[in-house]
Amino acid sequence: MRGQAEEIIPTRASLLLRLKDWRDQASWQKFFDTYWQLIYGVARQAGLNETEAQDVVQETMLAVAKHLPGFTYNAEGSFKAWLLNMTRWRIVDEIRQRPKADLAELAERAEGDGPTQTPDSGIDPAGSALDTLWEAEWKDALLNAAVASVKRRVEPRTYQLFDFYANKDWPVEKVALTFAVSVDQVYLAKHRVTALLKAEVARLEREAI
Image 1 (cartoon, rainbow, N blue to C red):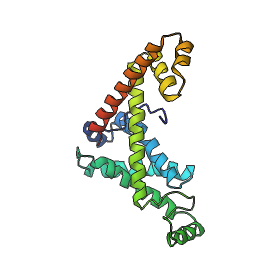
Image 2: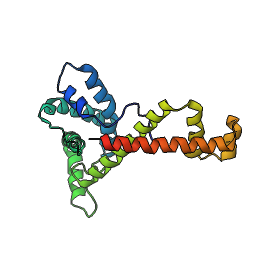
Image 3: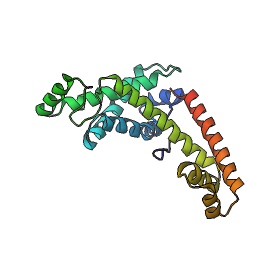
């Protein structure tokens, strides 16, 4: 379970409506806090360096602010694809701004037998691989959001039992001994947290856009 997401990744239609008001700084901050890591991570995996990826985050946020008034909410998930395109175009822009030597190397790779890559050996931002990466990162963000939500809802000890047994792969006897509980309590914690995580992920997927 990667990262420590503190925000829920799906943005509700109501939040999108609030974002159309430039004066609603709280909603814009929530939007930024929710999505910047997703955009940054995809940009890095597309072959951009840290500075370029940070620029992609900033430029994507500015593009969203500029074009959001014309966006129409679609409960079937169009915002996710729309945000991907916004991110994709910013990544391509960053690559185009690189020195000509780097772009020439990119063109040479594009003529080869393998998939197109950026000069830093990332995936082709114009290809379908970025769509696949975006989907995977989105799902990972959903899971992290579910973890953050469930951790707030259960006792810290309950989550620790689950974490050490299910995530850290400690033997159940070692977990029980370390936390001075019975083996049955460890199993119960795993069952409870797992059920909550599955339910939360399912809820987030239904509400994701």
